[in-house]
Image (cartoon, rainbow, N blue to C red; front, side, top):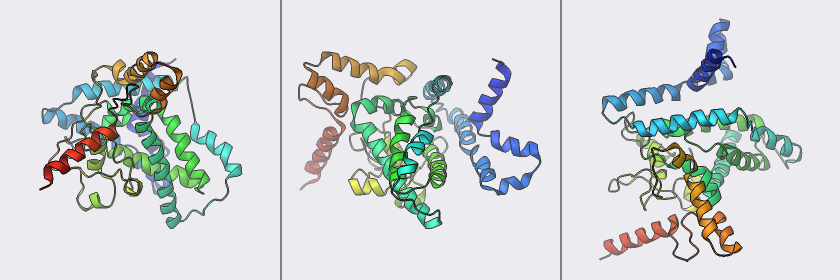
Length: 333
């Protein structure tokens, strides 16, 4: 393997400048007016903001170095694994379902709205199950382990989470009539916004974004989602449109009275790559090995995190409901 070209490709891929650089080298600047050209200009925005956020962290003396270090290691590890396990689940699911889908909508601006609402439903399902099924939480918990919020958290994912998510989201979209061309556009919009909402306070102090906080899911809402406070646990599963959180009762605004505490409730070393990446899998394996009987062993795998065979459950739903009951009791005359 030629190290320098590989390193060059990795850097340009991370910075998101590969497409723009190719257009600049071609000299055909009119390409920037096409869809691909616009995409090429948008891709570098998040990496640029990440570096700016990192610099401002040192300026404000809030460098969050532990979070950046672990998330960088996760990014490198996932890139390494990806060289040997190339799972193009979106293309695979399209290949299976496209010939048998019952209907497909035409690609118009108003059908794009429908398509995005459908996509958000698929995203809600994947994300909700990622918090409510212990096995899926093992894949998703890596993303929630950081104890600070910044754009590097975008890269904190277990490598199998994306295939699991793509199977659900793509299947839902295709079965409900979203054509592949529209799906790829939605994925680009969703991926860009999904990265931006992880922006930290070093770069954006107030994540509410003014009037937008009442219309869409903002960085403030996603900070709530990453919180381990009882009020905030297991809320705001959508990515851009908050419609399904409101439909299913999982929507939660950031409270001025409850300061966000990031991370997960399990005692862990958030500065350890191994604990962040594999800690929940190890914890699940220990619980399964100690559980009496096959039925309870299986329940540890499929019940929500916090479920216990002794019936002394500490799931997010129980913790949050108990907290809300105490609030109601305290505030009642």
